[in-house]
View 1: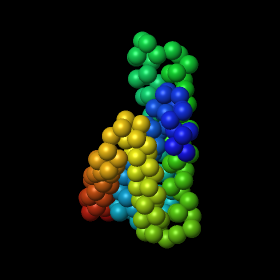
View 2: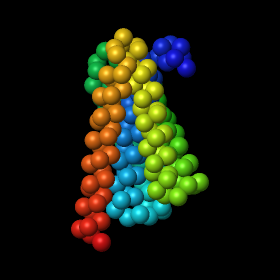
View 3: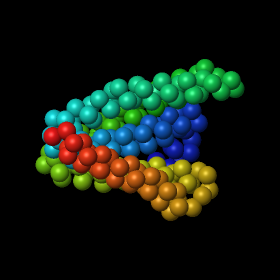
View 4: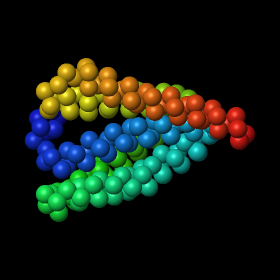
Length: 165
C-alpha cells in the first residue's frame, strides 16, 4: 500500500487525502453530536448518508474551485482532484454505517471512533513518510485536532439536548 501511495498522481493523492480526512472528522463529529443530542439510531444513520452524499459533493466542489484557481493546473488535474475527493469521502463515510447495522448505537459510535482513528493515523503516517517528517508528531497533531472536533461535537450535542428537549 505504501508503494501505491508514493506512485499516485499528486492530484489524486490530494483528493484522497482531503476526502479521507474530511470524511473522518465530519462523520465522527456528526455521529457523536447526534448520538448525544438524540440517542436516535435513525438520526445517526441519516446524518451519515447525508454526509456521504451532500458533504462529499460540497467538498468536491470546494476542491474543484480551489484547484481551478491555480492557473498552473491543467484542467485534467483539477478534475482528478475533484473525483478523488468525492469518491474517497463518499466511500469512507459509508464505512461508518457498518458498525451501526451490527452493534448497539453506543458500541457503534465507539467502533466508528476507533475505525476513524486507525484510518487517520495511517493516512498521517503516509503523509509524514512522504514529507520525511516524524510520523509520531504528524499523527499526534492530526489526532489532537480530531479529538478537539469530537469533544466539541459532544458538548454541542449535550447543549442541544438540554436546550431543545
